[in-house]
Length: 153
Length: 159
Length: 290
Image (cartoon, rainbow over all chains, first blue to last red):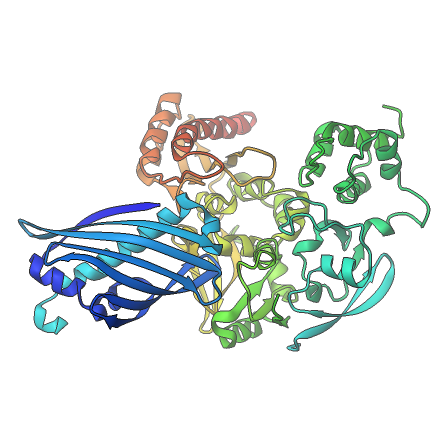
């Protein structure tokens, strides 16, 4: 399934970029994420929990930055599975930043493949759930990016 | 009670049975694997097909969705317990007479819901019969004969 | 399947305590119609199961002197479907219960279990919103009450927090002479709804709408109600044109999915027809009294 969204943040692209490239910021903004560790220059591991009804799937993800043009474009590929391999996920993600009058327009897309127990919900439903999670990300990210810089540290 | 297996006393087809079952064991598993009552069938194991239907405290329910550990003190009737050994119920007689059995996999579940219907509504119309059987799937698609057979059982062949 | 510890507490407080102690691996189990199916498919593997079936309080049905009905969380769909005390506007809940799945599943499933699972296409959620129900939830800090409209948070998410259980559904008295109706479209008998419409409607002697609450199921993460759309009919005679205008406005708020039951587009097209049918049925039911 493909998810495409865009939102505007009241902060300049350079600042938005530095936040997006900060793993600790991402841990705070990605719903269900409780840790990101850098492996090398371009790869990370992350733990993300996705809950759908009574199913709670904790994914161990490997995220690879495959292309990067600071401060306007980043492309990542991630793949991962639950500890018990009950669900697997694979995605290709792109994010573009563009200056606009009142800050930065962030557009992103993700091509996601889910299989296993979470795959049972069907693509239509999973897309709605993913879009809802994306909305939560936007909200947290915007709050952080628009806060006075010294507070963010 | 907090142990990993429960001692549960259930009356099955009139006889009290004490069973040690794990928290997640279903009644269907107990019936088929422990008590060797294989009339109730394991079809979808999701409560959709109806092949595992039995009577619990007098009501048709899915044995595949019923945890055995939850049944202490309950009364269970399976297709084996509807009529004395070697005899058939009116519904079973009619199913035979109307050739309403093809592969037979859904039959025991159908018998249970039809039996229950006639207990509560001795003279049902076609709509009532269809509603009563609506939760039981027949992949041979013999629904017409099944409905006819239940009506026939109700009227004693007069219809 | 792994072995789970099985508990059968006799009180709500004990159930909440065991569930809270169990943490993430704990699950309350009521009728089993959904949870055991998911366990059989290995979609969920609880460590601790807390059966609610020995808690007498949860099996009660009662009516308070002010007309508020209290349906215990462990009431089976069959019991609610045949509850003769659910009349007038409150009958919308009984009518929804009567259309859930099939008779054997209605013998098992409970109202508390169904709304806690909160399938977006389930029958109770729109009916409870139309009936202006309140959900009673018990947790470590006691009971709290959440309006149905704030209970269903969308796509299997509810206001129930870990360690909490739904203990009852409360239905306020509907206005005098109100009628409740539930209209459901599904592909085959017993299936979840492609879409459904629940409404509670009351008219005055002149045939003017004095009360209307309408909610749509199966067309979003949770039931969808649109007061702005209802306002197009309230205070007026419910003509076909006004009902169509209501439907047109409400459809803007729907967010259906494409799935194996039908496309989102199809759902958007059938909802106005279900709304028209629901009004027709409710108005017909009122006729002898008017």
